[in-house]
Length: 144
Image (cartoon, rainbow, N blue to C red; front, side, top):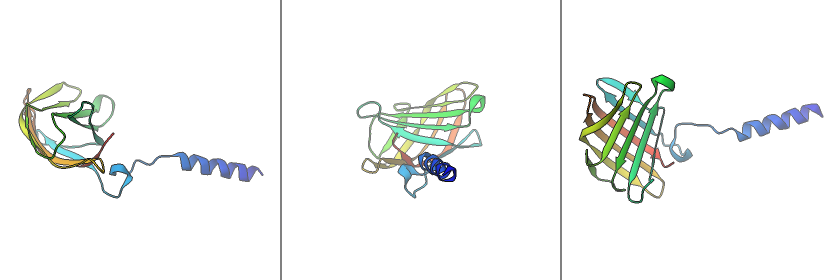
């Protein structure tokens, strides 16, 4: 009887675990957020988008933990697949040294799939504080 009880507890424990497989909406399509910051690769550990304000889109990406954590936030004034100018739309890159606000650049949304809740696109920019962001891409970011 003890073996059955232990086995039942193990099955319940494994069944309740959620695997983060770095895919959008638990599909087989991988998601990613990458760019180069002053010549150094940035590959996000986690990235997603949301619509906190009606008609706006917010994209978030996080890399690392604690004092080594780096964070992107991109705020767009629409919810469509188009090209957005920076700084009319905003992006901020934060690390342990400072928050760097975007002063110029562009972000192009190639896919804004409201049905499947995924967003993909590219971006580049420069910030106050002389941070240059090149080769930015995000693919199949899920809605959170």
